[in-house]
Amino acid sequence: MFEKLFSTEVLIPLTVASLVGFVGSLIAIPIILVRLPEDFFDDRRPRTWMQDHHPVLQIVGHLVKNVIGVVFLLAGFAMLFLPGQGLLTMLIGISMLDFPGKRRLERRLIGQPSVLGAINKLRDKFQKPPLIVAGDD
Image 1 (tube, rainbow, N blue to C red):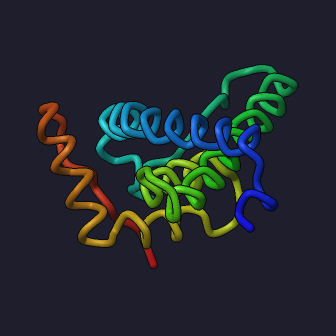
Image 2 (image 1 turned 180 degrees about the horizontal axis):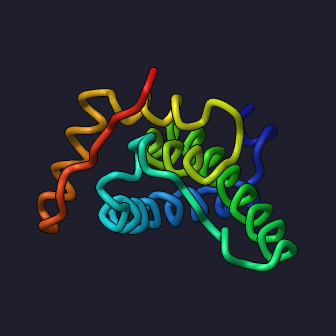
């Protein structure tokens, strides 16, 4: 019955894509988390990405950033069921998206002791200061 639903021509590329996504997340996620400024999740720090660029470049930049954020969010959701770092990938996707209440959601996710502990442990290995999670709730 399984062979009727999925042919070998479909399963092999899906398996390869899953492995590439898993290995890619193992490499990319730590690099991104180590490079974040320590106060990235602090609401007292304004985020001024592309503020000094031409308005057309701002629009294109925000569009591209949001598309990449959706890809990370969907990949992270898939990694909840497949091999990979699902929650961390979703967190990066959310941080790239623009929507109302985003910073509050980021703080809630990053404020989970297990998530923040894992990220700060990784940052400590690379001699980076721990993340500061603060805001006005």
